[in-house]
Length: 275
Image (cartoon, rainbow, N blue to C red; front, side):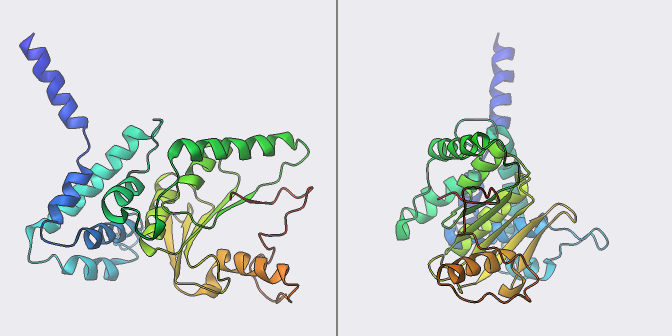
């Protein structure tokens, strides 16, 4: 009986994620917010490998980020944190609490409600996504893909819930004013296989605002960082929504789809604001 008990205890200890513990371990010597943001950057770099060079497309940014930890053995804890993060996501993927490990850590330990950053609970996200899916199913004649937008996406929990219910045939877009949240959302999109997606750091109340964006791609498998707003599909779509509402002229030479988000018609299933 003793041997069985010990075996069960060992199995439980192995399956328990220690992502939070590892991040706090590094933060003993460094700022917790900085450690978490650096982890996100290095995780994005790890998910964006050039198959020819076997290095990250963002190798230079990765080396600059890790350089601040060069005099500490704690730098070796970042790969451990990444492995533990992936393990916890996998263990919780089909659970009622969802697999948004990053969003929960940020909300509980970093944001603490700062600037009103309280993320929508998982069960509410699931409920809203199910309502959206029901509305789509009721329109039997409309089989075209939707554009789903969350203008205050946080870590992407609402869009992930929508993707789980509605599937891969749609486009998913997120906007948030917090750059750390945008990185979380980009990682969550990538690791949840939400390929037709983009997340942008901007003030959703200002149509011309743009800080940075990330586009998620399957072929090639990569998180594309977009530093020029003219290269962002989401920026064009969102900006044109404001232009359309004011009857402004939209430049016809724009190569991106100039259809605004805001023009939603009863017989048009191409667009849908989640909020």
